[in-house]
Length: 171
Image (cartoon, rainbow, N blue to C red; front, side, top):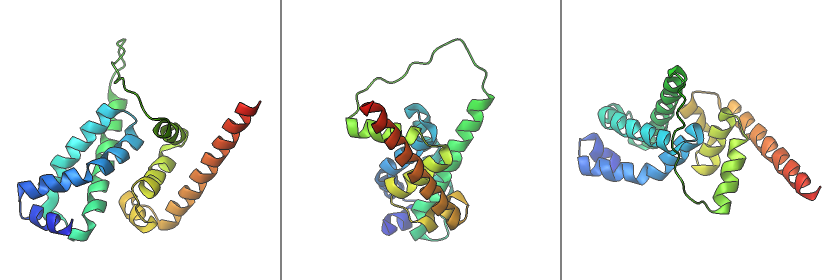
């Protein structure tokens, strides 16, 4: 990946395209965890790709590309949330995508929906994307101890939700 980043920084469009394609699943999971809608996630990803292309020469070190890109993505997601809050409500019901999911994916999404965004994002970055707590702290601009605390609280909330669901099924 470092070689692709180096070439992309030299404005090699093919290398940049391959680099972004290699990060697409990571970007989708992160954006979906924040935004919850496929269409919004796609918009945030598109904006992120454009911003990365424009700003990649400013990247300080190639090895931090993924952290840098994830930070841009999170900022783009937050921009969309702010824009959404400013929009006026209409009487129209937006069309939603219709698709089937596997049960394992459905359970994961349902569990993630039960978490507040600050916990959901940390869990997604840690478990879903494999970032270390120090990297998550840098991405979210919070302390590493805050990341560890949010992970612990998220685990507690997920365990509590699992316990309640299991108990509900028994009764």
